[in-house]
Image (cartoon, rainbow over all chains, first blue to last red; front, top):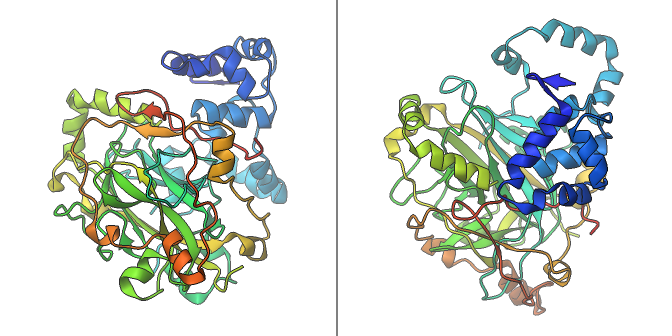
Length: 121
Length: 336
């Protein structure tokens, strides 16, 4: 999947390399180890030679690299378990809602996001 | 008002900068020993869950009236506030934090406006996180949850009442004109660097008491009071709910208990120290300095020592902040 012209692999690589410039803990080997994958596999992911990994690995990568989890999952062509459950509970309604919102500007979509209610304190 | 996204409170100020975004999540952590020693910063163990109060009809009426969010934690569990930005630049914000409506920086009762003398708020991105009550220059006492009504919370000690508990937070953005000026000045480079570096009880309601001593400076506001747009302030009440009652309320699994400082130290894992820009830290609150710690109160009440009070060995802390790169470590999963 591509976003802003960047593939999943190149996005992953640019995030990791930016961190690695100042922190050796973000070498291919060390990051792979922390995310429970092998360095060659991570390298192939970065070169888009294999399909994006599981939701679990995407979440670990997002946490390690400081990327938003939903963005990382979307780039990896996945939908998080909680979102999938929400859609499956009311598939027709949510499919319609997402289609109707796909071209709506961000600020208008944000008006639909539920606020944290403030009360009397 | 803020939104709730991936267990973080997200504040947007579309009228000031449509791209700006500030978030607060609440990090699980270990409780440092409640002794006279000053500890470095412990890591985070991931975000506490947050849920909308209005979704749970079983909550007491007074909790529902306050609105906001609910967060589960265990008795004597510690937490820290993790501040973050992201997306289109780092619009500075002034963040007021109170526990039981006692300001965590000044020890005074909550008031809505920002005050400068003494400063009763922290400024992000200068302040990347907050772990406790400011008691001395460069020293805080860790936020530690205890059941409300048992006399442990700072609120109960200072007001002799257990009315509020929880955490109260307000976030005030910089005025648009001041933000425009700042963006065009070279100090934005510095700010980006800072942002990168950040990288069995009677009551289910919890209040925050004062735990062990930790080295953390509260940085003074580098801007003027007029730079803050107080008409755009957003606020939220965070109710702290005993983790043992979480499943009954929400139907969700009970959160696991965090490791002890002893377990963590035995595993030889890192501690942290933040190095700011060398700005003068705030003095800390004499009122808060006079508060008894949770461990001291426990000893007085029960004549037994508080669990986890023994000092632990800590290695040289990892340096973080403008003078040293790298985010404060957040370990996901507690199965190490």
